[in-house]
Image 1 (spheres, rainbow, N blue to C red):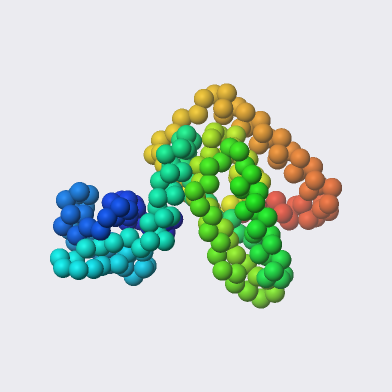
Image 2: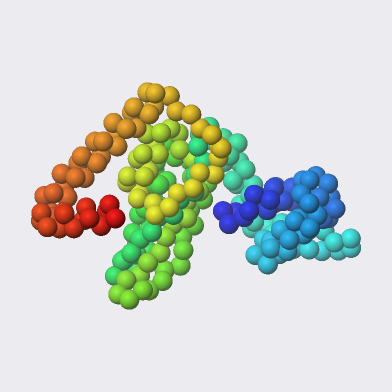
Length: 211
């Protein structure tokens, strides 16, 4: 579901319990007919729906229907306001080692009490020169700003996207707690780096960081 457009997600929800014609979908969703047909064509190509009978009805594939239902149930119990999608990249010199690291990362995410995980999709490892690389596509929500700070620092996503809401507010205390945690994390990280890197390495690092 994470690769669906917003229109495709709406279509999938309507097809969750029964197949529907394009006309029925058009009436219920209010999506322009040409746009709707383009989305349905894309979903057919992605093999998440099938079409059957006359007049033609579109049906959600069973495995996709189960995943839609699962996420719907997660969303109904999720009290977190801030929904996100993040990509966490990893590299290793051996493919088995990379898979092991990705597995540990997924286990760590499952143990986080302040995150609600909707899905974690693992990309197929790709070899580039001496290293194997992959990434986790994580769809989740966070309880508060300190939880978001924790995710950013400890999981180091290469990119992150706010799915919803369009606008979010944090209390001053929530913001204060997050910033204090962030300052503490950065201070400890800086202290560690200065112990293992030479002065020249640190200067080069700063030059590259602030380019």
